[in-house]
Image (cartoon, rainbow over all chains, first blue to last red; front, side, top):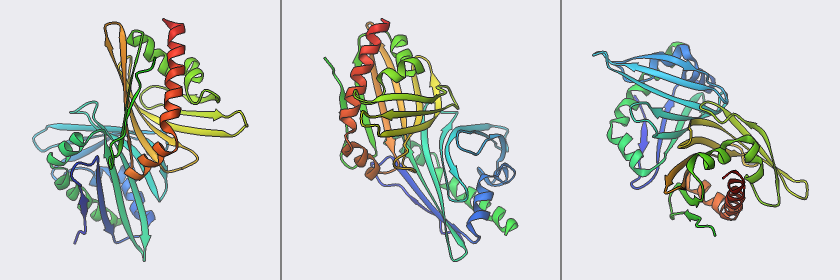
Length: 157
Length: 157
């Protein structure tokens, strides 16, 4: 049962997401940031995600390509500002279908009684960019990714 | 005469800065992004800026250290998400005195009749972070940096 929350306040630049996972923080962090696990949970359930680059360390770059069942591909990339295992990482994010629209993501993990609370704060360059991302179905895609991540974590516990 | 504007709307995550320079865009871009020029204009007038790292290209990292007349130093670093000369660059920014507080800066240049209009949009992780930066005297420091940049540009025209 997912306790995903997605907070999108009107007229603001940010989206705040929380979800808990039934595993210690280091397990969740590993599932979130290891290339071999990332390809299993990142993106929609029906798509296949290819990790083109995943230098998940301070100053590294990442690029993921999502392939849909109809063969259509969607690519995303960014740079990692900071990564402090197993606490948090801060990175940029750009969908290559809308070049020049960049956001800053802060992903944090807190452990509470053996469970882990995940929080992400994403800030966009404008409120319009934020609203466009939300309207494109971000919440649905995110929910699917988080459920898949939960399944990956279950195999690592 | 500076036409600097700094827009800080209440309750928002961003700061928008504009200023024009009396030079073509490629000259302004060069002055803004070349390490040999950066050290001359970046930071307060009374400080000395040492360019520790300036990999100003997509995926590069930067770190600048500002030394005040009393010997106190202030360091800043980030990663470059994108750089398209002479149009724009997008990078992260963190003041090392407040670790974990990161912002995303988008710097754009437009040429109009031989002059260049510079616009920067900076988005912070929270409204509180944005307000803290503004209250720390950001506008004064920015004004001094922009005036020094103007002087550097005058030597390159």
